[in-house]
Image 1 (cartoon, rainbow, N blue to C red):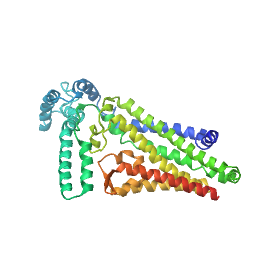
Image 2 (cartoon, rainbow, N blue to C red):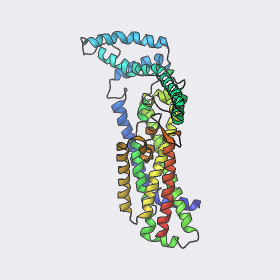
Image 3 (cartoon, rainbow, N blue to C red):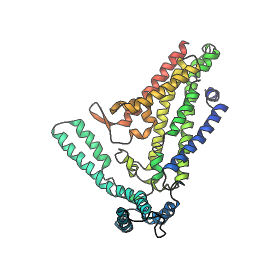
Image 4 (tube, rainbow, N blue to C red):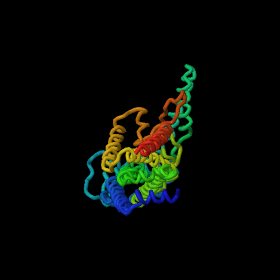
Length: 391
């Protein structure tokens, strides 16, 4: 069996052409990440170099535990700058006495790099406490009207948000863009379509399936080895691209101080149900993406088993992915959870505290997506086996 798995992997996935495509796509992915950095980062070459110098001056004194003294000292610098900038009477020329370029860029620098995020961090404790207070009130109300599901749902929310706070200020720019980066997922899908389209088709085109079918247990072992090789190939792809994403974002943005902070320290995840650190969340998102890719790969392999020619498999696979992406943007409410694209773009199922009513009990939406993915993959494997044996 191990030799069969090795043979199938070498035949369909670990080929010279696939290696060239992987290297090419890795370079493209790195260039795309660099473009994200250039367009978005405060410290990119497209922004003023003075920003980086000023940030290096203030960040060591502001970062770390948020204290009243730190906020007071920063506001003592910022408020006079803001007052002058609001009057719109200062010169727009370079001012040697400013921290960056002139008073207007100073105001933007302090607001953009420090005060906006400090305000979010400082106020999050009250924000979470308000959610817990409303959920607790809802629990009392639902218990009074004997609505068990409503009480349980609000209990889950209150438990998740209880005693939440962001007690430290760190630069989160790297993770803000890393967690919203989906381009590498598209590249993985393209490689998976190319690799999976030939899994069963090659035997059909060369009529080797007729010989395999005459071997004792040969068809079953060959079938299983194809699926295992597919899973291993997909795992390698997802791990390598996830590592590349993390490494390139870390190398370019050059600040990973926030990696141990809770996920809700990122403003885009303020309503998340997860109580994980940022690094733990990255691992979870990577694993979720792999599961979504596995569902897509299962359908691609199923098409390979059902269709006799590779070109139609390519076309239908691309159409399947395009349709899933379009549906993901159009479908609202709970139905989007049954779309594997929700898992591929994994953050979407973790952004908010959302539940599905299952037999009167609130189940977190990502559990539903995971169960649906397991069912999809199992059905695809079973149907592909039947299709292959019939030929």
